[in-house]
Image (cartoon, rainbow, N blue to C red; front, side):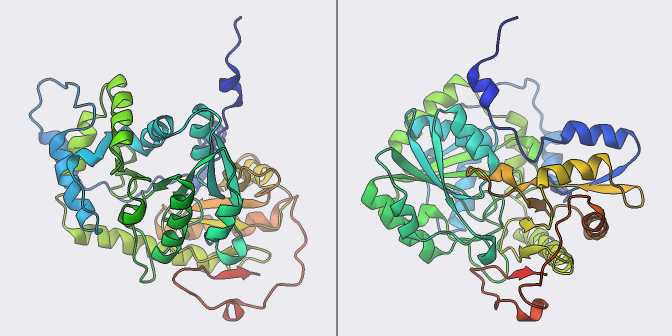
Length: 424
Protein backbone atom coordinates (compact mmCIF):
# COMPACT_ATOMS: atom_id res chain seq x y z
CA UNK A 1 0.00 0.00 0.00
CA UNK A 2 1.45 3.43 -0.89
CA UNK A 3 2.45 5.72 1.97
CA UNK A 4 0.96 9.13 2.58
CA UNK A 5 3.18 12.18 2.32
CA UNK A 6 5.48 13.37 5.07
CA UNK A 7 3.47 16.59 5.05
CA UNK A 8 0.32 14.60 5.71
CA UNK A 9 1.93 12.68 8.53
CA UNK A 10 3.33 15.77 10.24
CA UNK A 11 0.38 18.15 9.96
CA UNK A 12 -0.50 19.29 13.51
CA UNK A 13 -3.69 17.87 15.04
CA UNK A 14 -6.37 20.40 15.99
CA UNK A 15 -6.53 20.69 19.80
CA UNK A 16 -10.20 21.64 19.72
CA UNK A 17 -11.27 18.76 17.46
CA UNK A 18 -8.85 16.02 18.47
CA UNK A 19 -11.30 14.41 20.91
CA UNK A 20 -14.38 14.86 18.69
CA UNK A 21 -14.66 11.14 17.71
CA UNK A 22 -14.41 10.16 21.38
CA UNK A 23 -17.04 12.75 22.32
CA UNK A 24 -19.46 11.35 19.74
CA UNK A 25 -19.06 7.84 21.15
CA UNK A 26 -19.63 9.13 24.68
CA UNK A 27 -22.77 11.03 23.67
CA UNK A 28 -24.10 7.92 21.93
CA UNK A 29 -23.84 6.19 25.30
CA UNK A 30 -26.17 8.80 26.82
CA UNK A 31 -23.76 11.17 28.56
CA UNK A 32 -24.38 14.91 28.14
CA UNK A 33 -21.36 16.96 27.08
CA UNK A 34 -21.02 20.71 27.56
CA UNK A 35 -18.87 21.89 24.66
CA UNK A 36 -16.38 24.55 25.71
CA UNK A 37 -13.75 23.16 23.36
CA UNK A 38 -14.65 25.01 20.17
CA UNK A 39 -15.81 28.49 19.21
CA UNK A 40 -19.22 27.40 17.92
CA UNK A 41 -21.71 29.92 19.33
CA UNK A 42 -25.23 28.92 20.34
CA UNK A 43 -26.43 32.46 19.52
CA UNK A 44 -29.06 32.31 16.77
CA UNK A 45 -27.93 33.16 13.25
CA UNK A 46 -29.84 36.36 12.25
CA UNK A 47 -33.26 35.14 11.04
CA UNK A 48 -33.45 37.81 8.31
CA UNK A 49 -30.13 36.58 6.89
CA UNK A 50 -31.36 33.00 6.78
CA UNK A 51 -34.62 34.17 5.23
CA UNK A 52 -32.70 35.97 2.49
CA UNK A 53 -31.22 32.62 1.49
CA UNK A 54 -34.64 30.95 1.54
CA UNK A 55 -36.23 33.75 -0.50
CA UNK A 56 -33.49 34.01 -3.13
CA UNK A 57 -34.97 33.29 -6.59
CA UNK A 58 -31.90 31.44 -7.92
CA UNK A 59 -32.74 28.73 -10.43
CA UNK A 60 -29.11 27.80 -11.10
CA UNK A 61 -26.55 27.81 -8.30
CA UNK A 62 -23.65 29.03 -10.42
CA UNK A 63 -20.07 29.86 -9.57
CA UNK A 64 -19.75 33.23 -7.90
CA UNK A 65 -17.00 35.65 -8.89
CA UNK A 66 -13.57 34.32 -7.90
CA UNK A 67 -12.89 37.34 -5.69
CA UNK A 68 -16.45 37.40 -4.32
CA UNK A 69 -19.65 39.04 -5.48
CA UNK A 70 -19.17 42.74 -6.13
CA UNK A 71 -22.46 43.67 -4.44
CA UNK A 72 -21.24 42.09 -1.19
CA UNK A 73 -17.77 43.62 -1.42
CA UNK A 74 -19.27 47.07 -1.98
CA UNK A 75 -21.49 46.68 1.05
CA UNK A 76 -18.51 45.53 3.12
CA UNK A 77 -16.74 48.85 2.50
CA UNK A 78 -19.52 50.51 4.50
CA UNK A 79 -19.06 48.00 7.30
CA UNK A 80 -15.32 48.68 7.52
CA UNK A 81 -15.95 52.43 7.37
CA UNK A 82 -17.74 52.11 10.71
CA UNK A 83 -14.37 51.05 12.17
CA UNK A 84 -12.52 54.01 10.64
CA UNK A 85 -11.20 52.08 7.62
CA UNK A 86 -11.66 53.49 4.09
CA UNK A 87 -11.56 50.77 1.43
CA UNK A 88 -12.51 50.16 -2.16
CA UNK A 89 -14.25 46.87 -3.04
CA UNK A 90 -11.09 45.85 -4.89
CA UNK A 91 -9.20 45.81 -1.57
CA UNK A 92 -11.37 42.89 -0.41
CA UNK A 93 -11.22 39.29 -1.63
CA UNK A 94 -13.94 36.98 -0.34
CA UNK A 95 -12.73 33.56 0.78
CA UNK A 96 -14.09 30.27 2.02
CA UNK A 97 -13.94 31.26 5.66
CA UNK A 98 -11.03 32.96 7.40
CA UNK A 99 -9.13 29.69 7.05
CA UNK A 100 -8.78 30.08 3.30
CA UNK A 101 -7.89 33.76 3.71
CA UNK A 102 -5.01 32.75 6.00
CA UNK A 103 -3.76 30.01 3.71
CA UNK A 104 -3.96 32.01 0.48
CA UNK A 105 -2.38 35.00 2.22
CA UNK A 106 0.54 32.93 3.47
CA UNK A 107 1.07 31.36 0.03
CA UNK A 108 1.00 34.79 -1.60
CA UNK A 109 3.35 36.64 0.74
CA UNK A 110 5.99 34.14 1.84
CA UNK A 111 8.49 31.71 0.38
CA UNK A 112 9.27 28.22 1.64
CA UNK A 113 11.36 28.35 4.80
CA UNK A 114 10.36 31.92 5.72
CA UNK A 115 9.63 32.59 9.37
CA UNK A 116 6.64 34.25 11.02
CA UNK A 117 6.73 35.65 14.53
CA UNK A 118 3.61 35.14 16.61
CA UNK A 119 2.83 35.57 20.32
CA UNK A 120 1.94 32.27 21.94
CA UNK A 121 -0.38 30.73 22.82
CA UNK A 122 -1.90 31.28 19.39
CA UNK A 123 -4.80 29.90 17.36
CA UNK A 124 -3.61 26.39 16.58
CA UNK A 125 -4.58 26.49 12.91
CA UNK A 126 -1.98 29.21 12.24
CA UNK A 127 0.65 26.57 12.87
CA UNK A 128 -1.21 24.11 10.66
CA UNK A 129 -1.52 26.49 7.72
CA UNK A 130 2.11 27.57 8.10
CA UNK A 131 3.09 23.90 7.98
CA UNK A 132 1.06 23.41 4.81
CA UNK A 133 2.82 26.40 3.24
CA UNK A 134 6.27 25.18 4.37
CA UNK A 135 6.74 28.14 6.70
CA UNK A 136 8.05 28.25 10.25
CA UNK A 137 6.20 29.90 13.14
CA UNK A 138 8.65 31.30 15.68
CA UNK A 139 6.74 31.88 18.93
CA UNK A 140 7.20 34.73 21.39
CA UNK A 141 5.85 33.48 24.73
CA UNK A 142 3.22 35.44 26.66
CA UNK A 143 2.35 34.99 30.33
CA UNK A 144 -0.94 33.99 31.91
CA UNK A 145 0.06 36.08 34.94
CA UNK A 146 -0.59 39.29 32.98
CA UNK A 147 -3.49 37.95 30.91
CA UNK A 148 -1.23 37.13 27.95
CA UNK A 149 -0.54 40.78 27.15
CA UNK A 150 1.27 41.32 23.85
CA UNK A 151 5.07 41.19 24.22
CA UNK A 152 6.86 44.48 23.73
CA UNK A 153 8.01 45.73 20.35
CA UNK A 154 11.56 45.15 21.62
CA UNK A 155 10.75 41.48 22.27
CA UNK A 156 9.59 41.11 18.68
CA UNK A 157 12.62 42.93 17.32
CA UNK A 158 15.02 40.75 19.30
CA UNK A 159 13.43 37.65 17.78
CA UNK A 160 13.92 38.72 14.17
CA UNK A 161 16.34 36.65 12.11
CA UNK A 162 17.36 36.89 8.43
CA UNK A 163 14.54 34.44 7.67
CA UNK A 164 11.84 36.49 9.43
CA UNK A 165 9.41 37.90 6.88
CA UNK A 166 6.27 38.60 8.89
CA UNK A 167 4.38 38.91 12.17
CA UNK A 168 1.03 37.22 12.76
CA UNK A 169 -1.43 38.45 15.39
CA UNK A 170 -5.04 37.82 16.33
CA UNK A 171 -6.85 40.85 17.78
CA UNK A 172 -8.97 40.37 19.88
CA UNK A 173 -7.05 37.23 20.54
CA UNK A 174 -8.07 33.64 20.10
CA UNK A 175 -7.25 31.72 22.32
CA UNK A 176 -6.50 34.20 25.14
CA UNK A 177 -9.14 36.92 24.82
CA UNK A 178 -6.50 39.66 25.09
CA UNK A 179 -7.19 42.94 23.23
CA UNK A 180 -4.25 44.84 21.74
CA UNK A 181 -4.43 48.61 22.04
CA UNK A 182 -3.76 51.21 19.36
CA UNK A 183 -0.55 52.33 21.08
CA UNK A 184 0.75 48.75 21.24
CA UNK A 185 0.03 48.17 17.56
CA UNK A 186 1.67 51.46 16.57
CA UNK A 187 4.84 50.48 18.43
CA UNK A 188 4.86 47.14 16.64
CA UNK A 189 4.27 48.91 13.32
CA UNK A 190 7.64 50.63 13.70
CA UNK A 191 9.34 47.23 13.91
CA UNK A 192 7.42 46.09 10.83
CA UNK A 193 8.51 49.20 8.91
CA UNK A 194 12.19 49.05 9.95
CA UNK A 195 12.54 45.39 8.97
CA UNK A 196 10.24 45.49 5.94
CA UNK A 197 7.92 42.76 7.23
CA UNK A 198 4.33 41.80 6.58
CA UNK A 199 1.88 42.28 9.45
CA UNK A 200 -0.91 39.71 9.28
CA UNK A 201 -3.78 40.38 11.70
CA UNK A 202 -6.78 38.12 12.24
CA UNK A 203 -9.58 40.53 13.21
CA UNK A 204 -12.46 38.06 13.24
CA UNK A 205 -13.51 39.05 16.80
CA UNK A 206 -13.42 42.84 16.36
CA UNK A 207 -17.01 43.25 17.61
CA UNK A 208 -16.25 41.66 20.96
CA UNK A 209 -14.21 44.07 23.07
CA UNK A 210 -15.38 44.58 26.67
CA UNK A 211 -15.03 47.06 29.54
CA UNK A 212 -15.06 50.12 27.31
CA UNK A 213 -12.14 49.07 25.13
CA UNK A 214 -12.14 50.41 21.57
CA UNK A 215 -11.13 48.11 18.75
CA UNK A 216 -8.31 49.46 16.57
CA UNK A 217 -7.86 47.87 13.16
CA UNK A 218 -4.38 47.29 11.77
CA UNK A 219 -5.74 48.69 8.50
CA UNK A 220 -5.56 52.13 10.18
CA UNK A 221 -1.76 51.93 10.49
CA UNK A 222 -1.23 54.34 7.59
CA UNK A 223 2.58 54.34 7.84
CA UNK A 224 2.69 50.63 6.97
CA UNK A 225 -0.52 50.22 5.00
CA UNK A 226 1.27 48.26 2.23
CA UNK A 227 2.58 45.81 4.85
CA UNK A 228 -0.78 44.98 6.46
CA UNK A 229 -2.95 41.99 5.55
CA UNK A 230 -6.15 41.52 7.54
CA UNK A 231 -8.13 38.29 7.84
CA UNK A 232 -11.87 38.43 8.52
CA UNK A 233 -14.93 36.17 8.74
CA UNK A 234 -18.66 36.31 9.42
CA UNK A 235 -18.55 33.07 11.44
CA UNK A 236 -18.45 34.56 14.95
CA UNK A 237 -19.96 37.98 14.21
CA UNK A 238 -23.22 36.53 12.95
CA UNK A 239 -23.00 33.04 14.47
CA UNK A 240 -22.71 31.68 10.95
CA UNK A 241 -19.73 29.33 11.12
CA UNK A 242 -21.21 26.99 8.53
CA UNK A 243 -21.64 29.72 5.90
CA UNK A 244 -17.86 29.60 5.32
CA UNK A 245 -17.53 33.22 4.26
CA UNK A 246 -14.34 35.07 5.10
CA UNK A 247 -12.26 37.82 3.58
CA UNK A 248 -8.70 38.89 2.98
CA UNK A 249 -8.31 42.68 3.12
CA UNK A 250 -5.25 44.69 2.15
CA UNK A 251 -4.16 47.88 0.40
CA UNK A 252 -1.20 46.04 -1.15
CA UNK A 253 -1.99 45.66 -4.86
CA UNK A 254 0.69 42.99 -5.41
CA UNK A 255 -0.73 40.84 -2.63
CA UNK A 256 -4.24 41.27 -3.99
CA UNK A 257 -3.08 40.20 -7.45
CA UNK A 258 -1.34 37.10 -6.08
CA UNK A 259 -4.31 36.10 -3.89
CA UNK A 260 -6.62 36.66 -6.85
CA UNK A 261 -4.63 34.12 -8.88
CA UNK A 262 -5.11 31.53 -6.14
CA UNK A 263 -8.78 32.51 -5.85
CA UNK A 264 -9.31 31.85 -9.55
CA UNK A 265 -7.69 28.43 -9.23
CA UNK A 266 -10.13 27.41 -6.51
CA UNK A 267 -12.94 28.91 -8.62
CA UNK A 268 -15.25 30.67 -6.14
CA UNK A 269 -16.31 31.21 -2.52
CA UNK A 270 -19.71 29.92 -1.34
CA UNK A 271 -22.64 31.54 -3.16
CA UNK A 272 -25.36 30.98 -0.55
CA UNK A 273 -22.97 32.07 2.18
CA UNK A 274 -22.45 35.41 0.47
CA UNK A 275 -26.20 35.92 0.14
CA UNK A 276 -26.54 35.34 3.88
CA UNK A 277 -23.56 37.59 4.67
CA UNK A 278 -24.82 40.46 2.53
CA UNK A 279 -28.25 40.28 4.17
CA UNK A 280 -26.65 40.25 7.64
CA UNK A 281 -24.94 43.57 6.87
CA UNK A 282 -28.41 45.16 6.67
CA UNK A 283 -29.10 44.36 10.34
CA UNK A 284 -29.62 47.04 12.93
CA UNK A 285 -26.41 47.51 14.92
CA UNK A 286 -28.41 46.96 18.11
CA UNK A 287 -28.54 43.24 17.27
CA UNK A 288 -24.77 42.93 17.55
CA UNK A 289 -24.81 45.06 20.70
CA UNK A 290 -27.15 42.53 22.30
CA UNK A 291 -24.91 39.64 21.25
CA UNK A 292 -21.88 41.39 22.73
CA UNK A 293 -23.78 42.00 25.98
CA UNK A 294 -24.66 38.31 26.21
CA UNK A 295 -21.05 37.26 25.71
CA UNK A 296 -19.97 39.74 28.35
CA UNK A 297 -22.37 38.15 30.85
CA UNK A 298 -21.01 34.71 29.98
CA UNK A 299 -17.49 36.03 30.40
CA UNK A 300 -18.30 37.23 33.90
CA UNK A 301 -19.99 33.92 34.73
CA UNK A 302 -16.95 31.91 33.69
CA UNK A 303 -14.54 34.25 35.47
CA UNK A 304 -16.49 34.25 38.73
CA UNK A 305 -16.74 30.46 38.80
CA UNK A 306 -13.09 29.83 37.95
CA UNK A 307 -11.84 32.20 40.63
CA UNK A 308 -13.61 30.11 43.27
CA UNK A 309 -11.84 26.86 42.30
CA UNK A 310 -8.77 26.06 44.43
CA UNK A 311 -5.51 25.96 42.51
CA UNK A 312 -6.87 27.47 39.30
CA UNK A 313 -4.97 30.33 37.67
CA UNK A 314 -6.82 32.50 35.19
CA UNK A 315 -7.84 36.09 34.37
CA UNK A 316 -10.71 38.19 33.03
CA UNK A 317 -10.37 38.20 29.22
CA UNK A 318 -10.82 41.56 27.52
CA UNK A 319 -12.28 40.38 24.21
CA UNK A 320 -13.43 37.56 21.90
CA UNK A 321 -15.10 34.68 23.80
CA UNK A 322 -12.19 32.56 25.02
CA UNK A 323 -10.25 32.19 28.22
CA UNK A 324 -7.16 30.19 29.15
CA UNK A 325 -6.77 28.65 32.58
CA UNK A 326 -4.03 26.75 34.38
CA UNK A 327 -5.28 23.81 36.43
CA UNK A 328 -3.60 21.91 39.29
CA UNK A 329 -3.25 18.79 37.15
CA UNK A 330 -0.42 16.67 35.78
CA UNK A 331 -1.38 16.83 32.10
CA UNK A 332 -4.22 18.70 30.39
CA UNK A 333 -4.37 16.28 27.47
CA UNK A 334 -4.85 13.37 29.85
CA UNK A 335 -7.35 15.39 31.92
CA UNK A 336 -9.48 16.26 28.86
CA UNK A 337 -9.61 12.64 27.78
CA UNK A 338 -10.46 11.52 31.34
CA UNK A 339 -13.34 14.00 31.42
CA UNK A 340 -14.91 12.23 28.47
CA UNK A 341 -14.03 8.61 29.19
CA UNK A 342 -14.27 8.26 32.96
CA UNK A 343 -15.93 11.26 34.59
CA UNK A 344 -19.50 12.37 34.90
CA UNK A 345 -21.45 14.60 37.23
CA UNK A 346 -25.19 14.01 37.24
CA UNK A 347 -24.87 12.29 33.88
CA UNK A 348 -22.85 15.10 32.30
CA UNK A 349 -19.31 16.21 31.64
CA UNK A 350 -17.57 18.93 29.67
CA UNK A 351 -15.18 19.09 26.74
CA UNK A 352 -12.15 21.41 26.78
CA UNK A 353 -9.22 22.11 24.47
CA UNK A 354 -5.80 21.08 25.86
CA UNK A 355 -3.53 24.11 26.08
CA UNK A 356 -0.34 22.58 24.64
CA UNK A 357 -1.92 22.53 21.18
CA UNK A 358 -1.90 26.33 21.15
CA UNK A 359 1.85 26.53 21.77
CA UNK A 360 4.78 25.93 19.44
CA UNK A 361 7.31 25.82 22.27
CA UNK A 362 7.64 22.27 23.63
CA UNK A 363 6.67 21.90 27.29
CA UNK A 364 4.41 24.95 27.49
CA UNK A 365 0.68 24.71 28.15
CA UNK A 366 0.82 21.13 29.45
CA UNK A 367 -1.42 22.01 32.43
CA UNK A 368 -3.53 24.68 30.70
CA UNK A 369 -6.79 24.58 28.76
CA UNK A 370 -8.73 26.91 26.50
CA UNK A 371 -12.42 27.42 27.24
CA UNK A 372 -14.91 28.98 24.83
CA UNK A 373 -17.83 30.61 26.65
CA UNK A 374 -20.21 30.07 23.73
CA UNK A 375 -23.01 28.20 25.54
CA UNK A 376 -25.91 29.79 27.40
CA UNK A 377 -25.36 30.86 31.01
CA UNK A 378 -27.42 28.07 32.57
CA UNK A 379 -25.38 25.45 30.70
CA UNK A 380 -22.20 27.35 31.48
CA UNK A 381 -22.99 27.19 35.19
CA UNK A 382 -23.67 23.45 34.87
CA UNK A 383 -20.40 22.99 33.00
CA UNK A 384 -18.56 24.80 35.79
CA UNK A 385 -20.24 22.49 38.33
CA UNK A 386 -18.79 19.57 36.36
CA UNK A 387 -15.37 21.18 36.20
CA UNK A 388 -15.28 21.97 39.90
CA UNK A 389 -16.15 18.37 40.78
CA UNK A 390 -13.74 16.98 38.16
CA UNK A 391 -10.81 18.94 39.58
CA UNK A 392 -11.57 17.42 42.98
CA UNK A 393 -11.77 13.85 41.65
CA UNK A 394 -9.12 13.74 38.94
CA UNK A 395 -6.45 11.13 39.84
CA UNK A 396 -3.66 13.31 38.44
CA UNK A 397 -4.51 16.37 40.53
CA UNK A 398 -1.50 18.27 41.88
CA UNK A 399 -1.69 19.34 45.55
CA UNK A 400 -2.56 23.02 45.90
CA UNK A 401 0.13 25.08 47.60
CA UNK A 402 -0.33 28.32 49.52
CA UNK A 403 -2.39 30.71 47.32
CA UNK A 404 -0.57 33.57 45.63
CA UNK A 405 -3.07 35.94 47.20
CA UNK A 406 -6.11 35.27 49.34
CA UNK A 407 -9.15 36.14 47.31
CA UNK A 408 -10.04 38.30 44.35
CA UNK A 409 -10.02 41.52 46.31
CA UNK A 410 -6.23 41.30 46.51
CA UNK A 411 -5.74 40.71 42.80
CA UNK A 412 -4.04 43.29 40.59
CA UNK A 413 -6.30 46.21 39.73
CA UNK A 414 -8.24 45.71 36.51
CA UNK A 415 -7.10 47.67 33.47
CA UNK A 416 -8.95 47.66 30.13
CA UNK A 417 -5.72 46.65 28.40
CA UNK A 418 -4.63 43.99 30.86
CA UNK A 419 -6.62 41.17 32.38
CA UNK A 420 -7.18 40.45 36.06
CA UNK A 421 -5.22 37.47 37.24
CA UNK A 422 -6.16 35.25 40.13
CA UNK A 423 -4.49 32.18 41.54
CA UNK A 424 -6.64 30.53 44.17
